[in-house]
Image 1: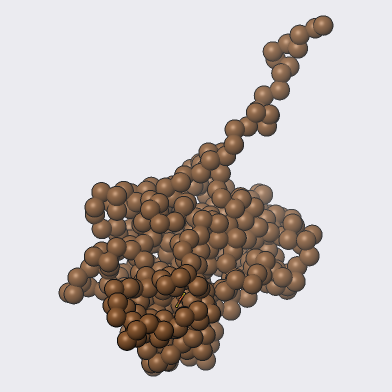
Image 2: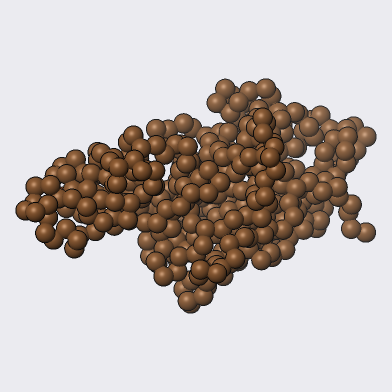
Length: 416
Ligand code: FES
Ligand SMILES: [Fe+2]
């Protein structure tokens, strides 16, 4: 038998690959996890105000916790633990009344702060009822969204106002939206996408994918125009002329609330523009000219909902992102078309339900994404070491207005 000479042995094969691991401190969101505790220091949107009527309670799963959201018939929103504190029946089957929600099993009634108002079968309506409390969370409404605070009561921040969403003109309104323009439809409220929130959140700082995925590889995700596909490129230009050395031109910097990134984008007929996004710790972003506030809200470790806000002229609708690929919506495309013209969804969900950080090879083009991960890890440490994370303001006199850096599409001149 002849030994294979060393020079002939294949290297770099997939044989013996170790199982992928992810950075638990950035990915898992349940109670007591590092990221879960960071997320619980911020108000998280959990529903659209317009969807929260007083007719029926709604199931909400948020940061791995099963909750029931309702609006009492006086108009107050309430968010309580799903299972009744008497014998555990789900309050999903409860009935909404003027001042609270009543459990179907034995009729105990709770107000929006979990106080037990009635125990109908008990002597004197329940002599000990003041001693029981349905676990609850504070809820507030703003910009057409219902926000919950699920963190330590003594750390509750003010619900922020965003400067760029304030002082609306008479001809403006704040438009809300939750449905992404892609992804399999499911029966859950708000149709969560079924992978970890971080892959979607990080995409806002993934600079090179903008020109590559959206312009060279596929058609423009948002208009369906076949822009700079490599097979339709200007014959007078060398291949990929617009993207050459792009990694060196990415602008990435820490901001007060997170990370800002800008990447030169070729807009045919108009030249290069700097598409500028800001990621805001721990799960928010403003996206160039497209979305004024985008929340990646984890349902649990393996699914999330995108809530979006737009400052819009009355009579107009910006949230119709018109995600057409060659004239079709995501749902109208065939498998063949999805494969040949993938967009954000295909690029992100195919990473896996959970990320595989141990297998990544981050490079220079990932500068903003790496910065965001460091910023998130720092914020996690802030909480662990007893400091307030970025943007958290507390106390009766706290300024509740937060400012982001500039975002949008800015004409771009390459640095000399
Ligand atoms: S289980 Fe809810 S009232 Fe008894
Ligand atoms: Fe994208």
